[in-house]
Image 1 (cartoon, helix red, strand yellow):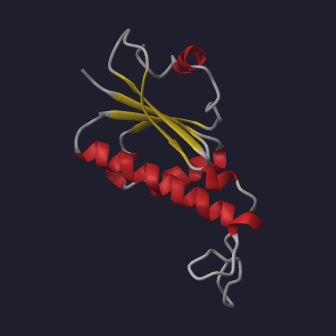
Image 2: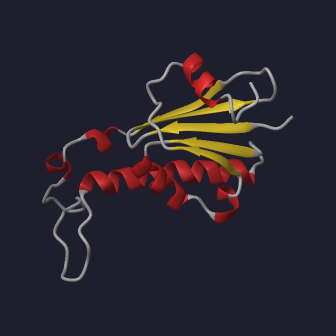
Length: 143
């Protein structure tokens, strides 16, 4: 039985589904929320110690706080996928995310985990009901 993980994510919400084989549909495995990615940049910037600031030394590119938060979230998800690969929790993966967040996810995956990703859809389906999601992904999963 080949288990396929399907990640449906954006910068503030991620849902991990599993497909356990033909005619098995999708089952929700885990859901992550990252509300910091939805906050305003001004709310994420503070002058207290340990806070993120947008000021940089000369020669360093500026990273907006929202982008920084999205990167942190993508790295968290990538670690989950790496751990899943290491424990053989899945044999293949499908990623569904808007283009900017897809880039962050791809950048966070290690090479061995990235090789298990067979399909990528640059769409935001995080609010899509599961039956509709199954229909949209049926070309690449074995429902």
